[in-house]
Image 1 (cartoon, rainbow, N blue to C red):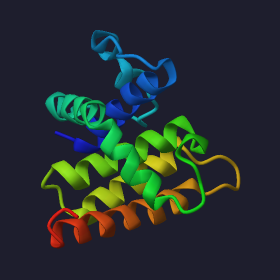
Image 2 (cartoon, one colour):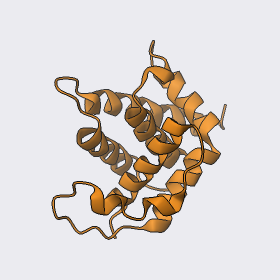
Image 3 (cartoon, rainbow, N blue to C red):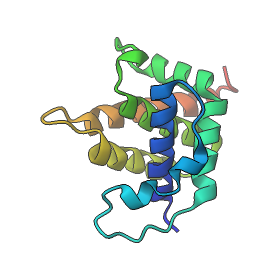
Image 4 (tube, rainbow, N blue to C red):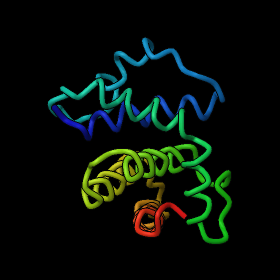
Length: 148
């Protein structure tokens, strides 16, 4: 099963949550990946992981947003696009609450950014890569220093 596709579904759900500012009807997302342009890719994915990401971000959104905001130098969180904000939320959640290796998370965030966030000459994947790398180092430092 593809965890990359699980992240895509979680991104779609979080995007709608963020846009509507309320919980989404998870049943309405059954066909999302079928409708997304996946270039004929195998669309089997880990539904449980999608829900873990979605619920994990929602349940920890204040902490996650605070960590993202700290690592956005001179750029307010609410100025990020809905897509970029939720891509970073997924990455931050995974860095904080899962055992997924840091490099896999960073690579997945870059790929999500390239696929769903790039507009013309603005390379949001580079921006998101820089931010998620700072967040990874910030989290590692906090864990090393006992959470302070």
